[in-house]
Length: 438
Ligand code: SF4
Image 1 (cartoon, rainbow, N blue to C red):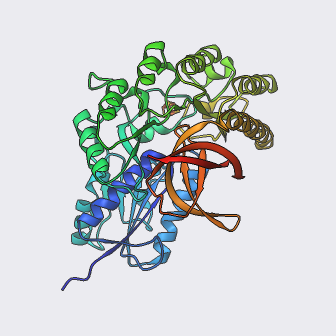
Image 2: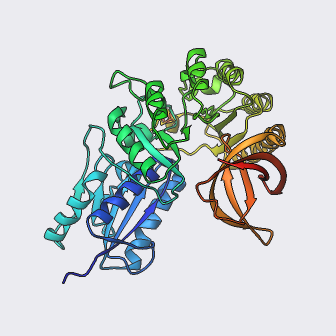
Image 3: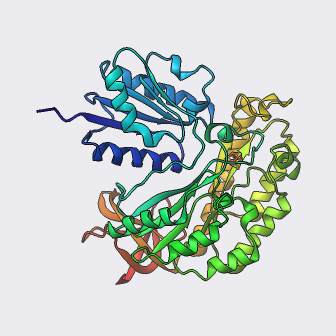
């Protein structure tokens, strides 16, 4: 009898990567592999790599080498964005047996079979196709919330970003395909879906449909009680878009709008397609259709040529907008992008100072947002048990993505409860004072 082969996976990077890793995990399971932790003892190691920053590149290389070290006889598969863009081709790396470019993750099982046949004599390299890659996930390890990839690629070419080179042009997933996946997830008990993509706002531009239509379709799915959206391009927010979303009760009032800079001159150099004023207007629109929605954002500090005045402009802008969460990134030079060749690259020390300053401001803004919502009635979807100050709690999220807790006197995993957001029992975790079960 054949021994069951053991496979271990490791994911790096964004939610789209996480979705793809989950899809590969399910493919391996269906092909008869036993999924084991990323530790010594596996026969196959799959690393879904990332290239968004230099640190991501480094971590990708480290994980590939760690896999080889854990079992020198194992098959090591390098998949994803780092593989696609690495300057020293991973094809030449003796640590790696199979190279799976983006759009080729669906071919994992075939590549493993081919490698077995050719074992020892050649490296398998599958790369470079253009159509939307068909991957499917019917359940998630978390049970409660599922990230659904609906789109790949980006046509924007922001001057700092390597992603269009790693992921290619915009491709959208067919709506009925998304629908089938959402239905499968719902029938496996998943209540919340998060629609994700590399450039989600472009969804449907290649299919003659739109993100709004997709959201409306997902909203119809029985069993799904929450829809959350991945990162949105500010340009998609119009009065009509926000008004339609506000009419969908399952839609979470939690919007991630990537700002990157609050200074219009910097935005122009970044090749972002909006001004600071336009971004402000998008926040106003959302706030006029939703009651204190959670608006979160990303900001890059130390972009080439960012003067102290430009940085101060961004800081003042963030103070004024008072967003829920601000993720700060220090600019990371990516070879092959326009920004990498720009003059006036900023010293690491200055990047760090600017980053610390905005992280502190982000924390203040987050407090202000949380205080606004404390004491209000909320629905919380609970996910997992956690120990806080020696006691057991179930932890969940409001629709705004604020963390709330109830004592773990029963099993509340995947249960919705309603109540008032009470005192803070841990940093950013609020006690839910219950009324009834959902
Ligand atoms: S929109 Fe800009 S930052 Fe986002 S993936 Fe596309 S090029 Fe990169």
